[in-house]
Amino acid sequence: MKLDKFCQSCMMPKESAMFSAGTEKDGNKKNDYCNYCYIKGEFTQKDTIKTAKDMQEMVKTQLQKQGIGKVKRWFYTIGIPKLDRWNRG
Ligand SMILES: [Zn+2]
Image (cartoon, rainbow, N blue to C red; front, side, top):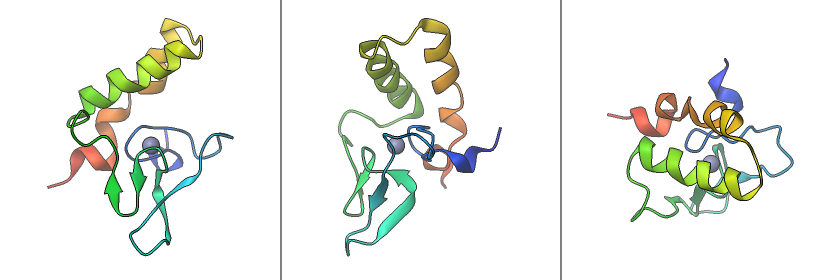
Protein backbone atom coordinates (compact mmCIF):
# COMPACT_ATOMS: atom_id res chain seq x y z
CA MET A 1 0.00 0.00 0.00
CA LYS A 2 1.39 3.38 -0.97
CA LEU A 3 0.68 5.64 1.93
CA ASP A 4 1.61 8.85 0.12
CA LYS A 5 -1.68 8.54 -1.74
CA PHE A 6 -3.49 9.38 1.48
CA CYS A 7 -3.86 12.31 3.83
CA GLN A 8 -1.02 11.76 6.31
CA SER A 9 -3.33 12.31 9.25
CA CYS A 10 -6.71 10.65 8.58
CA MET A 11 -5.91 8.41 5.60
CA MET A 12 -8.44 9.97 3.28
CA PRO A 13 -7.47 8.97 -0.27
CA LYS A 14 -6.21 11.93 -2.27
CA GLU A 15 -8.17 10.67 -5.25
CA SER A 16 -11.41 10.92 -3.27
CA ALA A 17 -13.93 13.51 -4.43
CA MET A 18 -14.04 14.70 -0.82
CA PHE A 19 -10.32 15.40 -0.67
CA SER A 20 -8.97 18.87 -0.91
CA ALA A 21 -5.54 19.79 0.31
CA GLY A 22 -4.86 21.40 3.66
CA THR A 23 -3.49 24.93 3.88
CA GLU A 24 -0.47 26.58 5.43
CA LYS A 25 -0.63 29.84 7.40
CA ASP A 26 0.23 31.80 4.29
CA GLY A 27 -2.60 30.15 2.36
CA ASN A 28 -0.39 27.85 0.33
CA LYS A 29 -1.57 24.30 -0.10
CA LYS A 30 -0.28 21.55 2.10
CA ASN A 31 -0.71 18.44 0.04
CA ASP A 32 0.34 16.01 2.76
CA TYR A 33 -2.93 16.62 4.59
CA CYS A 34 -6.58 17.11 3.74
CA ASN A 35 -8.44 20.25 4.70
CA TYR A 36 -10.43 18.43 7.36
CA CYS A 37 -7.18 17.79 9.23
CA TYR A 38 -4.94 20.75 8.53
CA ILE A 39 -6.02 24.36 8.07
CA LYS A 40 -3.86 27.50 8.15
CA GLY A 41 -0.81 25.66 9.43
CA GLU A 42 -2.57 23.86 12.27
CA PHE A 43 -4.20 20.52 12.87
CA THR A 44 -7.93 20.71 13.49
CA GLN A 45 -9.58 19.22 16.61
CA LYS A 46 -6.26 19.17 18.45
CA ASP A 47 -8.00 18.96 21.81
CA THR A 48 -9.86 15.76 21.01
CA ILE A 49 -7.58 14.06 18.50
CA LYS A 50 -4.19 13.52 20.08
CA THR A 51 -3.24 10.03 19.02
CA ALA A 52 -3.62 7.76 16.01
CA LYS A 53 -6.20 5.83 18.00
CA ASP A 54 -8.27 8.98 18.54
CA MET A 55 -8.14 9.60 14.80
CA GLN A 56 -9.17 6.04 14.01
CA GLU A 57 -12.19 6.34 16.29
CA MET A 58 -13.18 9.69 14.77
CA VAL A 59 -12.89 8.42 11.19
CA LYS A 60 -14.80 5.23 12.02
CA THR A 61 -17.62 7.32 13.47
CA GLN A 62 -17.73 9.45 10.33
CA LEU A 63 -17.74 6.39 8.08
CA GLN A 64 -20.50 4.81 10.12
CA LYS A 65 -22.61 7.95 9.64
CA GLN A 66 -22.13 7.48 5.90
CA GLY A 67 -23.49 3.94 6.18
CA ILE A 68 -20.16 2.25 5.57
CA GLY A 69 -19.93 -1.30 6.91
CA LYS A 70 -17.68 -2.58 9.65
CA VAL A 71 -15.14 -4.36 7.43
CA LYS A 72 -14.64 -1.28 5.28
CA ARG A 73 -14.39 0.93 8.35
CA TRP A 74 -11.59 -1.28 9.58
CA PHE A 75 -9.91 -1.27 6.18
CA TYR A 76 -10.08 2.52 5.81
CA THR A 77 -8.54 3.16 9.22
CA ILE A 78 -6.09 0.32 9.84
CA GLY A 79 -3.17 2.21 8.27
CA ILE A 80 -3.66 5.44 10.24
CA PRO A 81 -0.95 4.69 12.86
CA LYS A 82 1.58 4.37 10.01
CA LEU A 83 0.94 7.84 8.63
CA ASP A 84 3.49 10.66 8.97
CA ARG A 85 1.54 12.69 11.50
CA TRP A 86 1.65 9.86 14.03
CA ASN A 87 5.30 9.00 13.45
CA ARG A 88 7.07 12.26 14.01
CA GLY A 89 9.93 12.70 16.44
ZN1 LIG B 1 -7.03 14.21 6.72
